[in-house]
Length: 69
Image 1 (cartoon, rainbow, N blue to C red):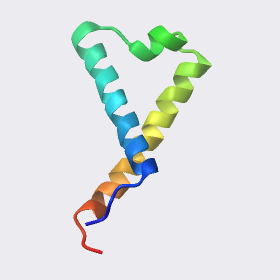
Image 2 (cartoon, helix red, strand yellow):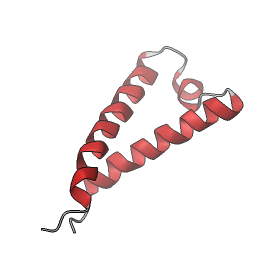
Image 3 (cartoon, rainbow, N blue to C red):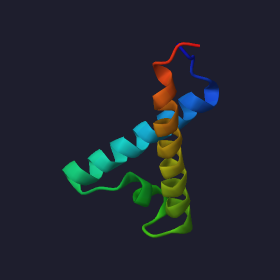
Image 4 (spheres, rainbow, N blue to C red):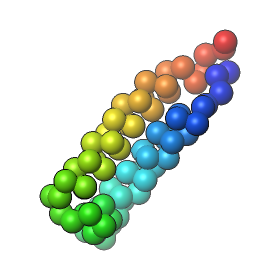
């Protein structure tokens, strides 16, 4: 089984943080990213873009996790 490297773990962490933020939005109508960086700010857009790219990366590595080397 393939071991996860540091970048894999970092991307996974970003995806988890993004999921928790969506949970906050869904349950409490409170967006942590917007609270920190400001709604529709450049900072929040960068965070959303990086989390989105991390999600695509994690999706790609998930297909390799069950394979033997």
